[in-house]
Amino acid sequence: MLRALSLVMLAVSSLVFSGLARPAQGQTPGQTQALSPEVAAYRAQIEPRCGTSSLPPVEERIVCQNEIRIGVRTDYPRFGTMGPTGLEGYEIEIAREIGRRLGVHVQFEPVTPVTRLSAVTEGTIDLVLATMGHNTQRDPSAFFLRPHYYSSETIIVGPRGLPIQNWDDMAGRMVCTTVGNYSNVLLAPNVGRLMLFSRPQTLIEALNSELCPMIAQDNTLLVPTLGLQDDGSRYQRLLGFAAVPWGMAMALDTPPALATAMSNILADMHRDGTFVRLASAQGLPVQYLIDQQARWNTDQCRTAPDSCLDPPLEMRLDASPVADLADRLEALLTDTLGVNIRLGFMESEIAWETFIGGLKVSLLVVVLSVVGVVLVGLGLARLLISPRWLVRLPAQVFVLIFQNYPMYLILVLMGTLSAWALTFSYGSAMLAAVAAISTINGAFAGQAVAEAYRIVPATSGQSRFQAALAVASSEIDAYIVNAVRGISAASIIGVPDLLNAINGVTAFSGSQTFYYWLLLVFYVAIVFLAGHLTKRALPLVFPGWR
Image 1 (spheres, rainbow, N blue to C red):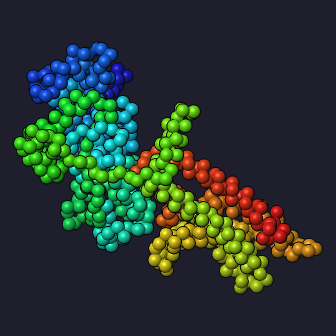
Image 2 (cartoon, rainbow, N blue to C red):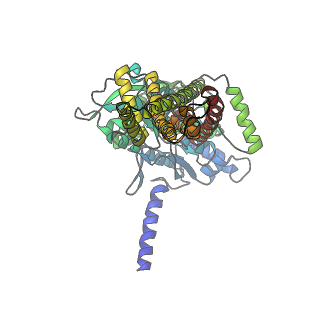
Image 3 (cartoon, one colour):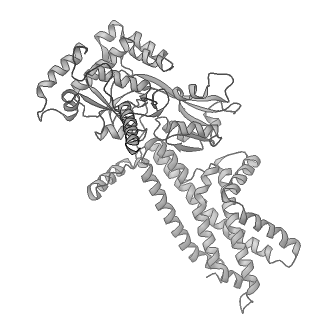
């Protein structure tokens, strides 16, 4: 029994491995008879140097060891997914075709939108072929091969009937997207809040479950997956932007001769219709590829190929006023601690403005929440100790409600009421958040003062209420600190606070882990500071406060 089970497990493992890392189909490593004259000439030039120290590792691996490591996605339908017999999709077949035309074995390596560029820059893969748009923001990080092999635009999709006509209609709204999408740099400043997901499929599931009111992703994924071309679809395309050519990339130090050989392969795949054939087999729109095939079969592109290369999408960001400081800090951390951290929020003007704006909003919400807790707490305490039951009863009901309802529910209710009464804006969202946070914690603070009032007598030079305030001051301090800790929840109703800002910056600059550590440090510091200042300031305003 155990032996049979072991044989089954071995067979399954072999099947999975063969799907992940099988040789390029139809090509035995080292064969040269099927190679193009340009690739054959390149190999003939490099092979005599195999085994020498003068040969770069990437050429040693590709030409001498007959292997190329290609980073691909495994979660993007019709481009790269794990099927019953292994990896399948448009990009998977492109990778295998490149292996055939190079005469090498293809070793597939899974990558994600977050890791795909770092994998090629760190040398763990030789080529990244993973639904990556070629834009000028990415050019400094990797060498993009051209001609490009596909094109797409980002579209925002939501339920039918949403009143979205332009970017002005997106102000204050939440949009879900994936981390690392090139278009997030344009999306983040134009919407109220971004919710980030790691995988496109999870993004679609969130839309179907109504967790996300709108999602943004490549039209190549959303149009067929959601059936947007069908009039009976639940969803519609709301906005489209940032049309971008897709490129595969290698490391910046890729030898020029290898880069030229790879570019010749891509040009040949356009000329002979390989890209059109592979895309058609996956049911993908092929008009872009048909146009490219016609272009690359012209005399001009044959004689002057550089003149036929499409430029990358222009996405260069203006440097922030503190960009040089960010570079120095990054170098200092690397030299002294050996820690490689990218301070992306300090590098570009849009990221820095988003960060500073979120920081200012968070500090303002902290101040208003502290004041709100004190005022609500003292006001409720006065009502709770009233000798008239008609005054006490509504206050008791109020306290009961706000002490027992979940904070997130109260925030959403306050946000809805604010938007209904004032129309939605960042100001109305902030007002609703401050009111919710202040009221919840003020209810506890007011009850603490009222309970203290019942057990303390008046003293000489001090009223009974002041004595109760002195007894309950430690508890009120705790509720003030709790309010400060709760300000991060304000982002769920669209307050552009630091958490929301960091979410937006993370969407297009990566470094998620570092940013969330930064948030942790901020909240620890602001809670400590708020507690320290209230202990000093409140006794000056309310005599008897301890």
